[in-house]
Amino acid sequence: MAASLMNELTTKPSSLVFENCVLFGGTGFIGTHFARFLLANHLAKTITLADIEPPNKPLWSATARKELSDPRVRYVSVDVCAPISHSDLPKNADLVLNFAAIHREPGHDPHEYFETNLKGAENVCQWAETVGCKTIAFTSSISPYGPTEEEKNEQSIPVPVTAYGASKLAAEKIHLAWQRGGDDRRLVIIRPGVVFGPGEGGNVSRLVRSIVKGYFFYAGNQNTRKAGGYVKELCNAILWVLAWQRQNEQNVTLFNFSADPTPTLEEYVNAVCKVAQIKSKPLKVPYSLLLGASYPIAQLAKTFGMKQPIDPVRIRKLVRSNNIVPDFLRTAGYPYQYTLQKALEDWKQEKPEDWAKS
Image 1 (tube, rainbow, N blue to C red):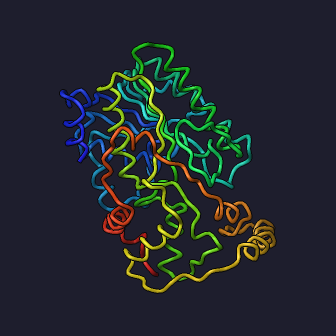
Image 2: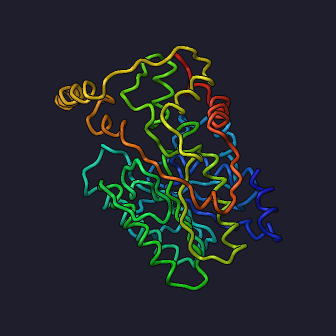
């Protein structure tokens, strides 16, 4: 799929075949999918998954386990919060992907986001400079924009309202400083909405699970817009933008990643219902009732050390739109590969256990 796009974008598609790709945060959800994408499209000769956590293979689909057993892929234990000087890493790299971050909200103290995301950015950029890497792609977030009902694009002024969003915006500046250190350095900054797909285990996985098991309900948030897209689309878009950069002789590109137009919650729900062949309509619960109940539930869970999804922070997020539009991809003519429904169908086909009712 990506190979044909590369042929359309450049007269020398072989120039996008990388010798050594190093993926920091590479054993995570996006990192493993990106490694698979590189392999499937013959875009890398070696791929290093550099991460503090070893590969969690039970979370992978059977297809992913088979693909990532390729000898071109290897894992190296790396903590990006510390200076990176591992002898097991390649002596040179021509593409670095920085996926490393902590991002779950709630889940961390404010200082933890900065300690990991800023130190990680500094250390990854320093390592890239040490080995002479000329190209970095960094996954930031749409969180720097803050929640918004009005459309925001790449030219909108970021106004982060969380420690996570602020830490990601600061990390972008660190990568930009690295790029300015050499005229031949290229940087792609990606601000993705929620990214979903096989093995995600996050918000969209919880949405799918709640729908197929019959306990999903609306909280007055049917029309809430939630920027997001399929993980395989994200991988395709990153490589497409890298090729676009080279063709257009650009050194810095920042782009939002989401389905276009930005889906509403109701559109997500309707697509899940179609793919799961569910005909019943979800119930509707008043938002004020749900928010009020979340406080005592969260306190009881904290007291007894229980994990559960009902938290005031998460409940407030239900009705806050992230109406972030992928204006760069739209203007540059990026050819989307998946509709929302096609993405969910592909997910279900690859990892049906994520859609199981029991």
